[in-house]
Length: 312
Image (cartoon, rainbow, N blue to C red; front, side):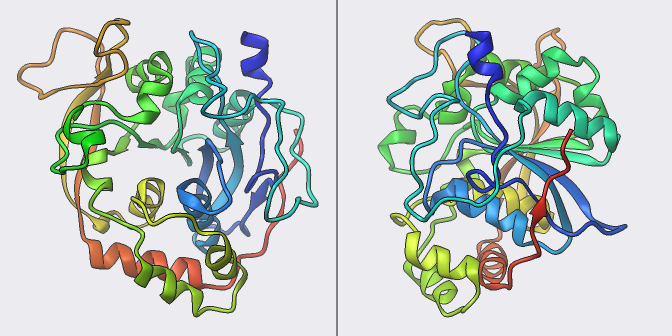
């Protein structure tokens, strides 16, 4: 099982490893995604970071499997399975290095300069922490799309189970390890804020007016109109003013293997248990016009030059 997990390869935009041109002021990030597509939240959030001229994407890693339980094949393929891409195959190949060691290598190459953007289950990040106990503290921080507090919605997926969220549930032990690690900063884009940001027909129409490659991709392959989970996490990292309300909470995940297995656990400073818990910035409310404008601009812009990643 561990060999299967560690075989997770690096892919960039589903098999492209890419970097935007580096500059002295570039913000460095490693993207860790579950990578389903074409279109959809996984791909469009990755594109938002690649499209930003102020960001150097050091690499893109794809997550699958779990630390304790076997991979859930009905949800996503295993690490060696690369299904045909409906939008066409890439000309570049993934590098022969597993995701955990790639991330470790990047934070050591650029200590305190690399943000880990983790928008899927947290298996890869937990493995990196388990291999290198200094990994988290050497990063600049981590941005998570995950967790749920008390979303105000009549959507039955969340109104009946307000503490259940897919990324934490898919690998609760990994989320537990990641949230307990000593990151300089943890930003969590929760269900609570994500359900306030829907990908609308008006947004699609505005993007489709652009002749540039990212916009043409979205116009052709965008999926059903749904919440912009991962895109919001990416854009809030690019522009923190998008988030208009957050709470500082101590966060963990239930790993009891009981009825609440995988649920989000939170405490305020006054009532937190005597455990080594870390404080997170839990995002709750969004400036929707500002986010919408930024996302449309990113997706409509010319593509930043893409080059292969450095080989280990």
